[in-house]
Length: 410
Image (cartoon, rainbow, N blue to C red; front, side, top):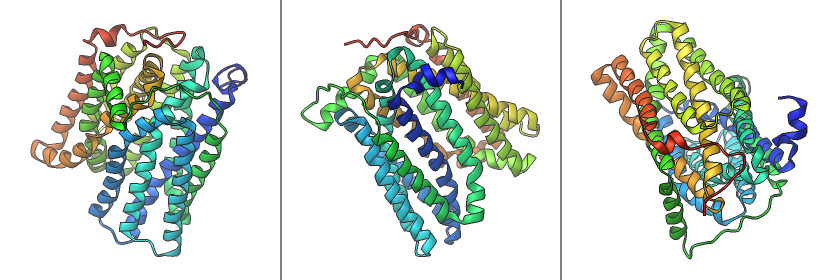
């Protein structure tokens, strides 16, 4: 990222700078918290089941609330949604941190804290994604989307890398206190965003607004088709990474190899993000969906995990292909969905992507035990790669073109 980008690119616009600064610092804190929370539960005498319930409480709250976040993100000023959610999250995380540091935290309290933060994250997520388009001119939107994802992924790499050290040196409570501080800084950044209000035609009811968002999703074949593909991806891959990967790789190559694999995955994200700053294919959704098939390389490499270089290559290709797709997917939504329905569409995207993940986490272990771990990983790879390639059969996916200016159908 050079000086010219800072002077003339998306980062030259104050509203965009404040948005990406807030989003990046939030991503940093959000990468620290899962590690700190896991050790906090274990330090309180919790079991793996207790930890699973705490994490599940967060995930369930996020899934249940995200559609409401989409409706509110189209009804209210989006920067206000971000500022309010970040402020509330800072207070909630500060409370949890104080409880841990003072020694009166309990596992149920951590679960309630997870629910609160899941709700707040779901309320702000659709607004955060939808706001990008309001902060830059239309011709700079492609680079704005790529830079934002690159900065957020970079912040997450730093957060994941340093989380274990923070917990080991200072304890879980102080690590979560850092997350509270990042939310407070993010709230200040979001409060500085100044963008015009979007003219929105509101339905008399929230359900009416939700129905209009649902109709907008199904108005675009490529949109609902790839949301369905994402549902399959998370249903199969969630368990492959969260359950089977640590076991299979840990048994064959050692636990450190799994850490290296996740590092290679994040490196793929970063390199993919850098590539999208320069590479702007005319049919970006087609190219991104084709490269999404590379995600099959990671579970395939896990099944053959007695070779470390192959495992690292598979993880890298997964991250690289997924990031190329994600940037072009985000840009396709930004450029083709009506402004007044953008947050609702993002909420359906988030819901479709993650509603199946808890199911996958729950059923992967029993199924893989019956069919064999390596064999199930091969099935996962086939589903992930095959569903992406199958999506290319749709003319709507193949022919959607990147626009130099945002032109929204009415």
